[in-house]
Every structure is written in structure tokens, then in C-alpha cells.
Image (cartoon, rainbow, N blue to C red):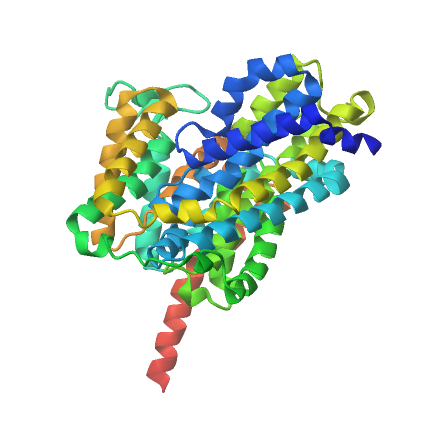
Length: 492
């Protein structure tokens, strides 16, 4: 346990600082993502040695979760996939002149969730990781389906429109290669489509380019940004009070979701927002600029980042691309993660754990003083800000795969996103379908392969059967509820 203070040596503190700063920058600038940034600095970290090198990689990993909310709140462009949900209320808060409050709450929520996940990582790592591994393909298919049904009506608008957007997202996720057979489908012989539709290109188009088009068609609405005094840049006492419950709920939910394979941080933020829509005292305000819509999802995606470290360190299993790069770094430095990591490399293990504590404090101290500077971005006139947003979106879309096809995808998604606004369709459910689609398809194919084509294999275990029944009930519950209300009105 004394090795925990290894993170406080000057060399390791410097490595942690550099990693968190790089991670924050990566989070702010959409496109590269934490996995790509970690891969780029991997040769440098190998030269630093196992402890300092892994501390720097870990700093980039959780620093990106901190930075992802900045552009989501300020210009409606998600810096990270996990920050898509933050755009719903965060950007509306910025338009009301509360960008500073939203940024500060995002930083505080990230700190609380990050600290909690590190404590849980120390206490419950082996136990929870083994429990997570009890899930097979059938259980993950049922879980993904349940998530789609429960979170489809995320924004509280028309359920039919939300389900249509979810289905469209799942359909778009099938473009490219079959995850098991490798067959190319739905590409229409377009060069560059074989790899599928870039998530970055679609989201920057749906949110960023659509915002640019909306500001062009409604210039008077785009210019109405409230200007605030310096003392109003930080959250009020009421906003802090309202943020605490969603922050705590998002932290616990995010940590548990982080134990699952797939884009856990993104899914965790959606789950947190869906829970707030059900249980928050201010749920009627969600979608129109509620601070709960920032606090819960931001806590959830940061807690999920910590939760994803448990299967990596305890069992040597990376569940996300970022932890896969971290695993590569460990192996290149002759450090084998798993049950014997603590016995064979105690300084490395406790150094990485300690760096999470130190890094969270560093990120809080880095982000809170810059809230005022970042918030001023939201007050820049649209005629100057929107061209910069468009350039940022184009760079992000191209840099994801270095493919010009993705830029055209971004343009098409931008036009579609602008049309969705006019027709009152929310793009958030489409993003949910795009995120969960690959996991659903892969889990379904794997489950059917294991069951030799027998569809009964999808509900052979009681957890899978329970979740499928819950998904069926949740899908018909709104219709039944509406029918009961109509009949009760007729009876009266």
C-alpha cells in the first residue's frame, strides 16, 4: 500500500500532468479520441519506463473524459462520443448565458465520479470483474435490446419519432463489414464505405454542421446569447444543490456500466440521462437547459472510465479501444495485467491507481480556473464562431480515418440533422442506435452460432430471459398506459 505514493515522485507527477493535459486537449478537439492519442504517444511512454509510461497513458485516458464536455456545451459539437448526451442540455444552458455554470458542474461531476471509481477499483476489482464476465453473448444482446427500448424516448418527445430514429441508427450501424463473416454490405460500391460510417463524422454532422445550418437560416435566434458578469460564470448555490443527486446516481450507474464490453462511457451517459428523465424532481426541464442533464451524464462517463480499468487490471481483459491500447503498452513494457499484477509489479499497480487520485485533482484545478475563458467562447458572434465550428467538424471527420468519404458523410448527416430539427426529430436516439447497433448485431450472431442456429439460445439463461421479458413489457407499457387513460376518460 505504501507504493501508492509512487505517483507523487517528481517524474511520475510530471508524466501524470502531461497525460492529463494531452487528454483534456484530445477531449476538447473531436476526432482523434483517447485511443488514437494513446497510440500516438505509445513509443514515448515505453522510453519512460513502466510506471511513468503507464501513468501518462492513464492520464490521457481519463483526461479525455474531462475535456469532452467543453465543445459539447459551448458549440454543440461533442468532443468525445461519451459527451453526445451533454449537448442536449449543456448547449441550451450556454445559450442562456450559463455556459460557465455548466462547465464547472461538468468538471466537479467528473472529479467526484473519477474519485469514486478509483476507490471502488481498489476495493471491489476482482469480485465485480468476475461477475461481469458471467455475461455471455445472449445476455449482452438482451441487455442491448433492453437499453434501446428503455432509452429510445430519451428526450421526452414523440415516442414513435424516437423509435424511428433508433431504428435508423441501428440500420446505419450495419453499413460496412459483417462483424463475424467479413462480408461487405450496404456500401453501394462507394469507396471508403467498407469500414462503415464513422461515428465521429455522423455525430459532428448531426450536431455541429446542423447547428451551423440552423444559425444560417435563423440568424436572429443564433445571435441571442446572454452575456454574463464574471461572478455569474460559476454555478449558483441552487444549481450546486440540484446537481448533487444526479451526480451521485450517474457515478454509481457509470461505474457499473463501465464493467461491460463495448462503448461503456457512451452508453453510461445515455443511461444516466434516461434515469434522470424518470426520477429527477426537475425532469420537466430536461431537454430545455437543466443542470441535471450535465451533472448526471458527465459523472456517468467518467465513472465508466474508471470501471473499465477493473477488468483490465484484474483479469487482463480490455473492454474498450482505450483500455486495449493501455494493455498493449503494458505488454510492451513487460508488465502482464491480471490476477498476479499486484504480486509481480506492485509499484506499477499502485502507481497507476495513485495517478488516478492525483490526475483527478490536477484536472479539477486545470479546468475550474479556465471556466471563465471557455465560457467567453459562447458569446462570440455566430458569424465568426460558426465558420470555426464548421472547420473543426471537417477536420474531426477527416482525421478519424483519414478518409474524404467521412467528410461527405458529415455533410449528409449535417443536412439530415438540420431537417430533423425542422420536423421535430431529435438526433440523440439515432446516436444511441448507432452506438448499440454493432454490439447488438455481434452479440446476436455469436449467440446464434453458439446455439447452432437455435433461436431459443437467446433466452436459455435466466438473466437473458429476464431482460428480454423486461424489454417486451417496456415496449408495450406506453401503449397500454395510453389505452387505460383513454378508457378511464370515457368512463367518466
